[in-house]
Image (cartoon, rainbow, N blue to C red; front, side, top):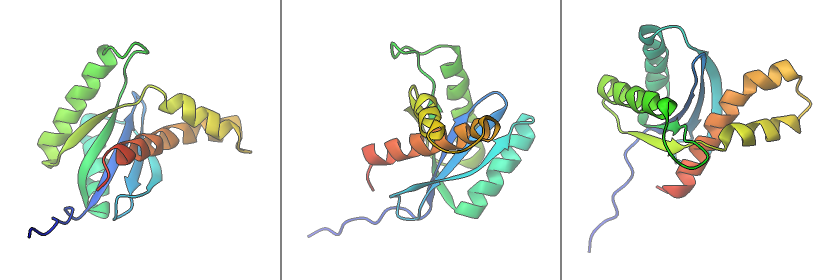
Length: 146
């Protein structure tokens, strides 16, 4: 009889990477739910990696999911290539598995969900990246149960 292997300790971090901001979400320790974290304002590669390192340490990140922007047809474009390079940089820099996950509808979904709230347009805009990261992580965890 073989014993089931326990999942490796740590959490999954999801990123919705844009040119100016990075939406961030993290799983609970059991990998069941996603919670949003404050959105990171992008500065430069070195500072972005420093901010991510703090998150890796604070949440004992064991893997990362990055939203992969695809065209509606499912084809990749220039933004997809940028995310592939970003994912490779994270993998090399932090030494953890990095997964790319289709994010085509997350911003639309996030906007729809946030429109139903009482948030002002300004606050809603600030929350879209975080909500998109939550949606990326939730859909990834549903497809990859621990």
